[in-house]
Image (cartoon, rainbow, N blue to C red; front, side, top):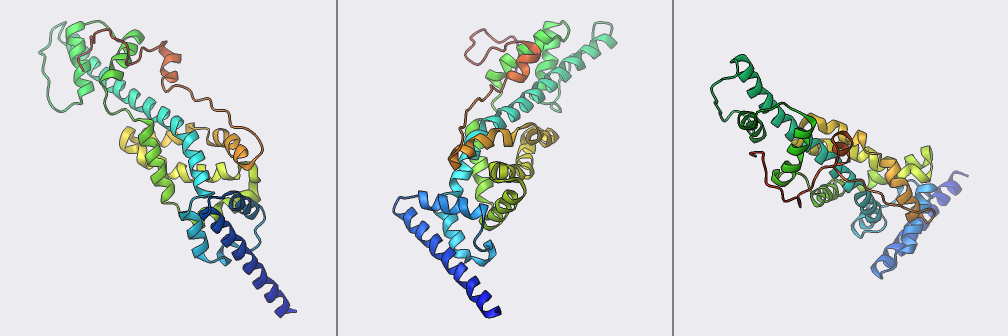
Length: 282
């Protein structure tokens, strides 16, 4: 009986190996449907455990693209704009906070000096802080929502560090390329068992990005990066796209502008095409 079980196990492994080899040959011939079908069927109901299959087969699958590249490309397409939006919002907020800090610092000096205080600048502050300090000295006034909106409008033409979606896409590619394909497949299989095929892949992608994107974004926006991924509805964005990929459902794209957050609070913001001369000395 034990020998029969062992023989059956060996036969199952050989069948899985042959199916994978056929799928890889079809990829080389430009045919991807069989491999995609094999992959989807496998993660829903594995014939044998992933660890039982030769590592070479999974490595070849990973190198030759489908369907792992599909999974990554879908994630990049739908998440890069949203991540870009959130990072840019945080960058804009940091710029404005620095400008306001400089503005208020000069305002405090003038208040303590009875309307007069020596105008002194040093190199210990950021360009935005200095711009705010100069603005309060030259223009006077008080900090208002209108001034804050103006800072954003002018800053969008002057701030050269605001992240572009192309940079985010490249970063996501690097993150996904660093993922161990064996571990990825194990995670997808476990997620399918726990949550079902419809949300399994989005959950795995979220688990990958929630630990990697903040590490990268910290270099751009500091500690606020920890909030970025928590604010992005990964499963809501990816589930329709993966359902479409699986052959059931559709993926409707509705990417908000990265200034929605500011416009809701301060009204519409004029973009870089606006030609009014800058009043703010960035």
